[in-house]
Image (cartoon, rainbow, N blue to C red; front, side):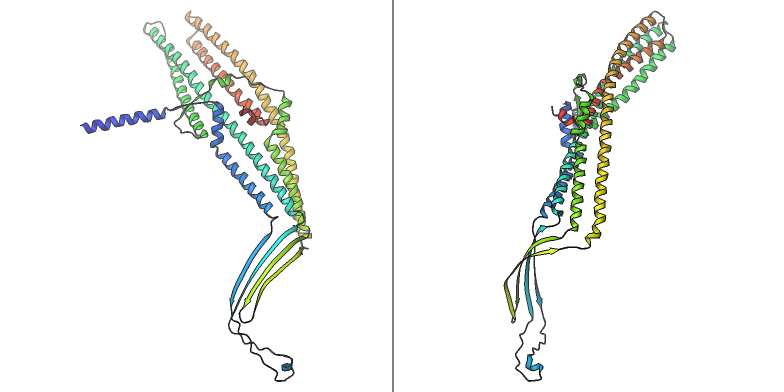
Length: 445
């Protein structure tokens, strides 16, 4: 019996500890969320790997200026060949003098060669320049993806805020509906209210309970999504900065954002570097039509027992090579490289148009949302006044229960729309900053 009691007590303690862990709360400001998302972003880790790859490619291009060196050696075993050495008198039919031929049954030799490129038609120089530009472009691409991570974090943060605000508003409205059901129930028991009106109030309360369940599920899902985004345990309950939505955006003239986008957008700068890299690649390809000049040097050592040995055989010289076939084989390669440049020029013009359109759209979205906030704020006042008037009419039997319940729903919708519009203002303004290439600087302040 005591063992069962101890097991039961242990289970209760374990459940209590699990509950405490599940309810772990963490205050989280937006700058803290951005820092965590940047540190734990798989997308940025992939971008870093691309930078390392581009940096290695640049080093490979630079290493082509270094000399090539090779060392080789061989040991050969030979059988005993029959070697007859004849002199001139032998050829004339005389007996002549015969000498014993050396017995050679093995050969050893070693070679060392060094070749330093002096001129390669510009292929090495332009190859280095092209790789250097691509390495810079990879870093700019990583910076652009970093801004995307920041914007995604802001959107996730605001979605979590909206989900929490919706739960709070629905709870408040549900409490009012439940109080109304209680009042209507007392009136119905005393014969002062029709049964049908009580059922309408109960139905509205039931619908709000269902809405609360959905809102709580959305809140929990948004919280888990934020935890995963930040690299936190899924059970962590986040407490957000609710004052964030009350900070007004300092909107500048439209032209300021357009010029900033064309100047500071990382994807625009990256595409420009890719175009310059392609132009260098054209020059490098054309360099294949020119001859190559190398300085060469070598050392040879050999040993043939019973015959001869070679040491200190050093050679230094200049080598020139020219592939005549490159005159007609390289033409197609050059055309491909030039076509790549044309594509990037067209993409650059297309991207500039897209940037201008994006900035204008996001700027108009911010202005439109500011108007919505003002309208929804006024709508709350109108909904509250409408509910007050309808309630007075209902109390004086001048309005129906349906009118009262509709006024209550309109009041809840106005509050939700207002909260959502204020939250969306943060997302839209930061999206404008991202489009203008100003988000990273703004998030660091």
